[in-house]
Image (cartoon, rainbow, N blue to C red):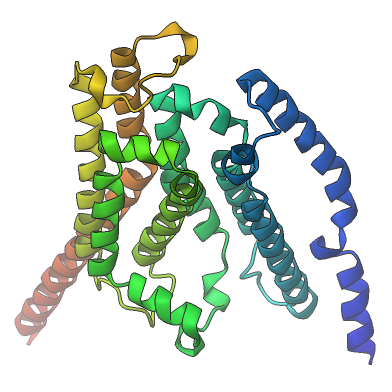
Length: 321
């Protein structure tokens, strides 16, 4: 009983109990959004505004995920007295990733992306390159028994976690949807416009989970060299696309045709900046690639040194005899 009382007392001061902070922060956030949408000239009385520009479903899903995350964190902290396997830094990483994902997914940025290919690139690539790793790094996978993960959701994730399946999905999303006609469809179609950021976010999370071997029981590549080449190949495809945009001189590559562009820049200049941004935003994942190659080289050098040291020890032993 005393343990239950202690747990209840600690839960009362836990993160999940501090929802009174949500009201003032929510009002501040709403004020920023209101000002942003007014600056973008978006009409809030239209169906498209609530279906695409400010769809409440991602917000409700994010609140549910944060509530579940904070609840598990509070229960872990109330039970654990050992070295923390779930640090405050991970909490900040997870919350930052979720808020960044929402800011890119459903925010006043949506009122501007139809006018600039550069902002549309930031919107989608930001989900894949920044929000996804922040969320993954914030999840305490060391406390998750991947062998016991059962159910329809985990079965789907197990299939998507296969490197071949992920490669095909990324090839479709990162190449096909970066072509001009398909990108324009993503701007015009409400359903595609609302779902595409979530697809980028989900695929980015899977790539980072594969790379960090977050779920050991799930299908995955087995060594750092293969993982490094696997992630590098995907990033290389995006960098090639960004380079094509950067050196392109065709207005037709800009899906924002027929709408005024931001800052008075020409459509060709907008394409060039979008290409540079797409290449530059690959930096976090390229750092992951470098880490894989470094780990692989360190392992090869370590094995060579151990073999050399073993040969030297054996020869020294024979000389002593």
